[in-house]
Image 1 (cartoon, rainbow, N blue to C red):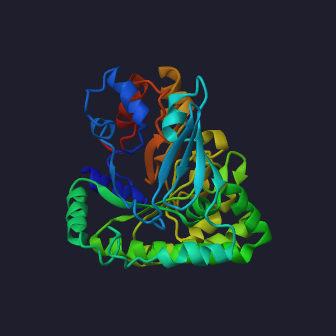
Image 2: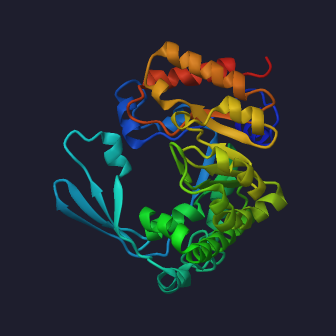
Image 3: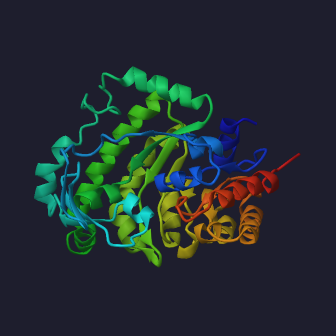
Length: 367
């Protein structure tokens, strides 16, 4: 099997020739690895043969022109394309991966209520806007199609989009979003519905251009569980997921959800919404791949699941972790191995290289 055939088989819950491998390497990790053996100038994803390709649509914000202002040595004010103002902070001894990742605290959200959303955001959620690369009227549409066709020659190629909950948080900030879910659910439902319709229209455009499916980034939880109850998800957010997944279900294309944290209580509704695969299966949050495989392995594929803390540890620990996860998740297909978050700079190059070797050796289905 080539990589594309392998991943399609896995996402269809069929057994491939071997487990596929995919991950996301932080820029500071790449820099560290180049000092530890990764050939200089060679992208880690190419070196390790990661097996998914992505079309990233960076033009799906409301389109506010951003600004960055350094206040002092420890604080930077950032105006985002979502129209919100936040503060990026740092401190002496702050880990480089936090600096590169951007600790961002909202201090002036764009949207405070329904009127704000209708005035400041909704008019700009136009999937036919020719200025949007992923829009139906983009002057670059034919070139985007060429790019997708080229990517598909080697890999399953997904469009990566921000989910409706995280998109709303970018407009409102976390505290106001969670408060509004309780105190003004009508406002949040309206906002989620409009954002989901916009996302669905963008997705339709990209399916027409040939993408193989959707990778949706929507962090719904923290370590101890979702930010809201399953009932709130079902009433307010789930209709948006159903709307986004409508064309994917019709075409039989994968709907992959990336959400950090423990989302176990939401999984039955996610499946009903059309989600077909989960990532990253954060171990420290209780996302046990053996439990998930036993409960949902006939309905979901799984991507990730290797404890990032163990990847930063000993080779013995890595071997035990990788083999145990392969034994739990590989039977019947449906597993792409990778870290349970992303590859942080505290993970040595030789450790990750060892994980990949183990996956290729022990993740084979047939000689």
